[in-house]
Amino acid sequence: QKEVEQNSGPLSVPEGAIASLNCTYSDRVSQSFFWYRQYSGKSPELIMSIYSNGDKEDGRFTAQLNKASQYVSLLIRDSQPSDSATYLCAVNTNAGKSTFGDGTTLTVKP
Amino acid sequence: KAGVTQTPRYLIKTRGQQVTLSCSPISGHRSVSWYQQTPGQGLQFLFEYFSETQRNKGNFPGRFSGRQFSNSRSEMNVSTLELGDSALYLCASSPGLVGDTQYFGPGTRLTVL
Image (tube, rainbow over all chains, first blue to last red; front, side):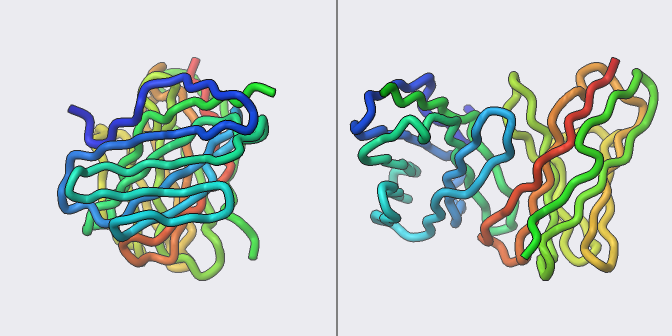
């Protein structure tokens, strides 16, 4: 089992729809959780960080964390073609080691 | 603030050679992490340096090494290059506390022929 698993893609949604990206992790002592967006040929850029159970909203993006279920998700509301990218889930342990999922490629169709 | 910079941006080497990649973190950041990204393996953690000390290490062979200088700049070295080392090497910096957000550089694209 991989340490961080993301829902297999690619994921395709129509413009204006909600895109839902999921991530599970195996290390129960994980403390910090991040979502990065990576456009083709570019480096990852941070979208959201979340540290406590519950929801965290930032504009059209909402991150959800459930430590009991070892699950973190990212919702993108009103998806735009510019949201088309690969989304990476990253999990940090207390020791600071970062583990990334393989990513989910999202395509938003106009 | 200036972002994370990496040099060179592109490299072509042949098998058996060695290569050194450089990373300059965001000013004030004390932690530098290195990652290898390939289409088949995704983003793989190589190692992290904090205040000139290796704080974490991934599962890579000893051919991969790194160091960090007193100004927080970091270098990564790969000796005896193999074809499978062809990848995008990304450097990320953070202030240094566990759980801090990482900020990625543009990467160095290494091709081994």
